[in-house]
Image (cartoon, rainbow, N blue to C red; front, side, top):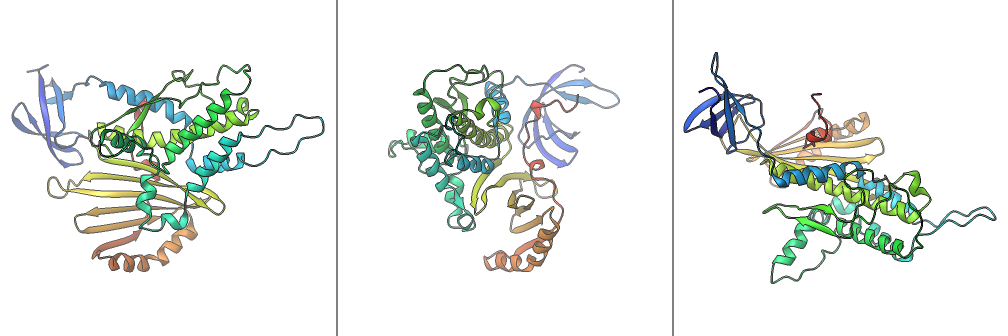
Length: 395
């Protein structure tokens, strides 16, 4: 009947624009491009009977965790900056203050406790030789910051394991560094601050844990004077330039926000029933720091048996300021496909020259069904999850 409300369950996808549904106990085939997955529950309304029956999904009630997720995204996205660039700026901030002209007030130096903490953090960043070592890479990924809260949660709820801060975790080191900067700032004489200056943003945090999730997020930072307005100044604001400690704190906040944005992408995908994982691994090169960016996700293959999934890893590996390698590695049953690309002509030539060597190395590791191709790949940020709710793209 027109206007009738029905419950539906997605049975499976038959193609890009076709799915099978169980609607009120009857199996039907429907034409839709909506990103629905097998097992997903829908509430639909009959909005048309002729010339073809049309079912319109009813807008679900927004769950509290989705509201919390969106609010946190609104806070982290404007603050985030590439971790490698932030680490470069942190290293520069440790340099002795430049000499001043006679009669001028000498530039302020960072407090000793902050200086030591920053040096420890920078020395813990993995080198290129470390991330290219398969035996060391898993530990580097575990310490990249996205597992910080879940690692702490496990140590707290497991009686046999003491609650301890994981050594070397990037996010926890950043938060500890921020706390040290806050404590040092609190000992300074009180002075008038601009309206856009925030209170300590990481003094307390409420972790939100998702069951069986590979990650958790810090959902709220208490004490932020302007968290709802989004007016937190960026690290290079003029208001911060005259205060090295405050500028240092904003840099730390920018790196934490980048880690949290990756956590939020992963969590948002899980809430939607998708298996995605987002990660940035900072690497120490001779000329500075750069980020290896990584995404892992699962996709149902509509052209194969029902329930069969392929696992894909998307990588972006920086080689310099204007050159990087983009790679997509897909595993489907016993088949492994590697696609490589670079926007740099010289890098593409090098990849083409090394294709046979890469094939030999993969086969030497027991992979028989392997293909390696040099093919144009879309930009890294177009592969994974984006926060579409922030911008109305249809307006």
